[in-house]
Amino acid sequence: MTSIPSASGFAKLGPALPFWLSLGLIPFAWIAAAYGGWTLLFMPVLTWYLFSFLDLLIGLNKDNADPQTAEAELFWYKAITIIWAPVQILTMLSIMIYVVNTDHLAGWEEWALFAGIGVISGTIGINYSHELMHQKPKLERWLADILLASVLYSHFRSEHLLVHHRYVATPKDPVTARYNEHFWRFFPRVLKESLVSSFEAEKAMLARKNKPWTDLSNPFWRYWALQLGFITVAAAIGGWWGVILFATQAFWAFFQLELVNYIEHYGLTRKHLGDGKYEHVLPRHSWNTSFRASNWLLINLQRHSDHHYKPDRRFPLLQTYEENDAPQLPYGYPVMTMVAVSPTLWRRMMNPRVQAWRARYYPEIEDWTPYKNGTNPMPR
Image 1: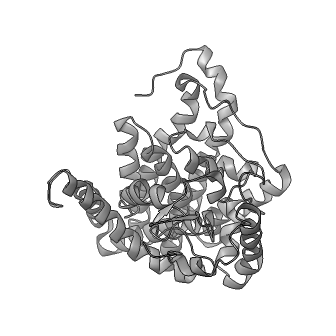
Image 2: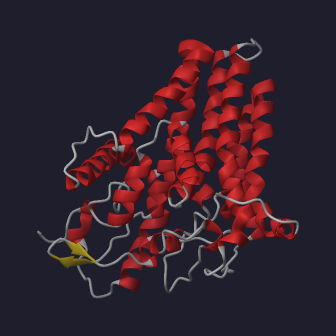
């Protein structure tokens, strides 16, 4: 449980304040709900374009906190991730109650409003759930489950912890984008494969305990119950239209997630050691970027190389790396996700960087053909 800080502890709020900028998006969601029209652009503009501009203006932050910093020093960093779940859910449901009981917005405006809310619940909510699911306290893990259920993507926790972190940058990881695989091929593939792989991973864990997948300890029962609960609440608020609005929000949330997943490991492959084994995960197996403003918005998710190298580190302690240790993206995630939706622009920008990554880190591998499309370079 996160304890309340002492008076001296409030003095430590300052360094954490930039990471609280996400709360500033909530009033704009309400403005869009009240006025519609052009104000519906607030949420995508403020998340994608504003922080892209701020990255250009403010630049990089290559400072690293002491990774041995005590938990007690991180109260204000942890607090924003803990309070976000009730803030996001109360905002979404109260806005739904408001719009279905008024007639000042057209149907398309209500749909666009909830698409915009999905940008927030995907960019912020899923990202915060990612931080929370890696922590030991039960409260934080429950908040992660609640946030993921609110976007109908509960299986992400099992997929991320049991599949992605174990198999990242190998053919066994559905979420590692293959070299030359464009996003519009990656997205439907991942929607299917990550759901299957997450369920199979939980089923295999139960089998090792001599339990069937139907055992109540299978977290998928919790996932389904929470998701059904949110759908039921949406139906109670607005009938079928409420469910459609909720599903719209959910779709754009996990669309944002998979855009980020796409860019985080695109084209990167761990060296195959033979007999189906791969080298250990290193910082070089994730794209890294140190842009200050977008790391405020995304609570240092862009220091992704260190997250995979040390998954249990809380976000304020994640380290950044230079080119010699980890490949660098040319821009922050907001810009990179916008580029990713254009296969031509993406390949033009990223394929030369993947080739340079291969030459830098694996000069001994002359033929990368066996690694094509995520296939194993040699039989097991």
